[in-house]
Every structure is written in structure tokens, then in C-alpha cells.
Length: 215
Ligand code: SAH
Image (cartoon, rainbow, N blue to C red; front, side, top):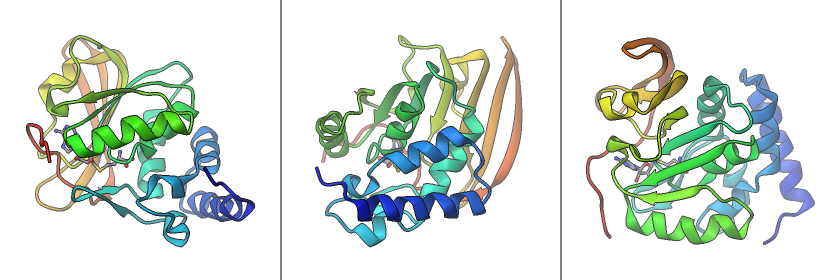
């Protein structure tokens, strides 16, 4: 698939913009610099692909804004070989960022159409997370615990099932709020029953929904 010098140039500009907006994690910046975001979109809207904005990907869902992807990933402090659970595969872009950083990625999507599309597409460009179709509210109890958990849709509260699948010493990043605005919450698990939570600004996400959808 086509990744030209022009695409690379636009990507470099996007990364420079993310640095100006405060993204410092070199691994995150390198991943965004390496991933051809234009290939994740319905057609190659190159101008939109490298603008720092969200974009529709079908099934009423969006590929997150690069700044949001970078910010959430930076909060996770990804290390090589971290076992990461992502809720909301969507376009697969966020999963690719985690894979570029050397993580082992488990990703869940509740929209059948998106799940099927991404499961076919991502390996074609060299990214191989473990794909699951299901309700991310429940996580993946048989595959946990995870070093990091990332929720890429807005939740009204923190799902208990996900907290229990976080390793002690692990980090979870989840946007939490009512209606259409969420606080970016970072939860650290300090002990069996000990969690601390910090808030890191406000963002807009599509909602985290219960159950699965087949169309
Ligand atoms: N991480 C994605 C962003 C996708 S937007 C990307 O990089 O493109 C959020 C996604 O979460 C949507 O695809 C939506 O269908 C999915 N979603 C919402 N609720 C969910 C749930 N309970 N379980 C799994 N996926 C969910």
C-alpha cells in the first residue's frame, strides 16, 4: 500500500505539532511518525489523515484525534513487552501505536463490521494484535491480568471487571464522564484493593456502549 515521501513529510509535521502541544514520550512520537495513518481511513483523504483531528471510520465511529491517541498512550508509560488491553479497536490505529512501541496488544471491538474489517486490514500492513469481538466492559478475564489497560471510548464510570484485570503496579487510562465530555482518568493499582486515580484534562469521545452490535 502506498506510503509516499509526501505522506512522510505530512506525518513529520503532525509529529512536530504534537510536540508543541506537549507530547514528550519519544516512543509515542516515533510510532506516530512511522504509522501511515492515511491507510486507516475509508479512502485516502491525505489532508485529513495528517490533520490533528478525529475522522469518521464507518458504523458511526471515529478514528481518534492523533493528539488524543498520543496523550492516552503517554499516560500509560508503555514499556517494551507490556501486555496491554485496549477497549475499542475502531480503526486499529491506536493498537498499531502500541505495537510499534513493542507492546503485546489485546484489543476488543463491539461493532462486528469494524472488527471484521480491521482484523483483515491490520496484518496486511504488518500489525498483529490479538483481536476480539465482544463487550469491552467485561474485559478479557481469561487473558489477564494486564500491565496496562486503555479505554478509547467514553465511560460513565470505571468498570469493576477492568479494574480487577489490571496487574498490581499497572496503569489504566479511561475517559470518564456524563454525556459528551469526559475527564481523562489515570488509575494506578497499588495493591489488591488499593487504587489511586488522577484526572488529566477533558476530552470528547464516542460513548462506551454495553453489549455487541452485529450490523
Ligand atoms: N481506538 C480507536 C478509536 C475508536 S472509537 C482507533 O484508534 O481508531 C471507540 C471504539 O470503541 C468504537 O469503535 C466503538 O465501537 C468501540 N466501543 C464502544 N463501546 C465498546 C465496548 N463496550 N466494547 C468494545 N468496544 C467498544
